[in-house]
Length: 119
Image (cartoon, rainbow, N blue to C red; front, side):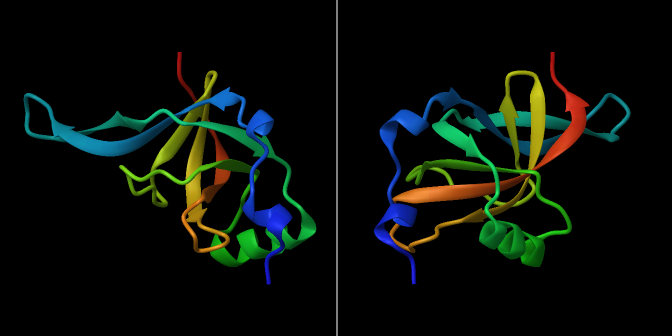
């Protein structure tokens, strides 16, 4: 069972503005699909290290998770694995998006830092 501390977010911890992007392949002049990324949301949130419990849970979902990003639950967009998160010039692949208390108050994104960087 989750405690109240796990289901609430200190507003001061939501200090990082990021972009959530969704892949949308576009055909080039020759008809080949070129991967492009479209911004779908720019939320404020906070990065944190994985606790031992989160590390265990994350490894059940994916092969590797390096970071967790906590944000308010978005009402306008559904965030799923396969999307990506951009912070500063770093790119993170979203491995899983979980609503820990099932009340749609916060969303935890389990991320894998990519070798790709954006300029």
